[in-house]
Amino acid sequence: MRALIKDKTEVAVRNIEQPKVQSADDVVIRIALAGLCRTDVFMADGLINGNETVTLGHEFAGTIEDAGTEAAGFAKGDRVTVMPVIPCGQCGFCNAGAKDSCQNTTMLGINHDGAFAEYIRVPANTVYKLPENVSFKHGAYSEPVAAALSVMKADISPAQRGFIYGNNRFAKLIQRIMRAYGFENVTIHDPQTEKLEDNTYDFAIETLATAQAMAEILRAVRPQGRIIIRSRKHEPVGICFDMAVKKEVTMQAVNYGPFDEAIALMADGRIQVDDLLGDVHELESFAAVFAASKTSETSKVFFKPGTEPEVE
Ligand SMILES: [Zn+2]
Ligand SMILES: [Zn+2]
Image (cartoon, rainbow, N blue to C red):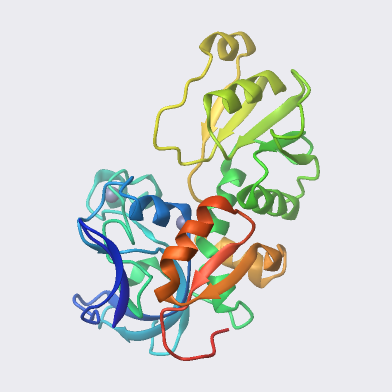
């Protein structure tokens, strides 16, 4: 099968062996569409530690091709998507049933072969069925929706006034999800064009952490306000402790919301994301698509790794 692979020397489309069910709880998925994420670009550029040789990609949807004997409830042809962050299954948190707290997670496209390929093998407990009315494109967008949905874990309430720092696609998605939960007083703050009022907001949601952004956010939240940390900045970011202490702010970091609820938000029409979803490309044009994603943030782009013409 064809796969977009990163190894020590290059990123390239290669022919590799098609994955097969290995253990009883594996499934193999035929990938319809896979979305390109910043994490994939960072991985391609060697900025994330992962496998030396790995197939990139982690946001995708497709159909079950084969299921192991213990992959209960899945059959060939089922339309599915996958939570790409995989708990270790062995630590104290995992054993206690708190797999969302696992600190030894691994991720598709980094530590396991990913989704920019015709087929992928994943553990069945990471797989979610897609309702009929959720297209493959929307299904492949479940992971960003689940990531944005994490803000609903924060201790905030709909009557409060807040802002989302950073005018980008992720900020728009967060705002739409919050509206679906009754948060009407949440604005998107574009640091390029606007200034925030000091000491005003009940909460701030960060999508773009820099020392300057954190300083702006700290000024804008009210005393005893809340700062919700959401971006996955790899490098440390400076925060003025003096200002944070004087204001007695609370910082709360959030990771993922429930994957099934992310899918349901799209299926029920509680959020509309069509305008955030962009073009579909062939795997072979990856170089141009990766390069373009670094300069433009307008819509999510997808790869269609298979050879069949139609994908919906
Ligand atoms: Zn992603
Ligand atoms: Zn674990």
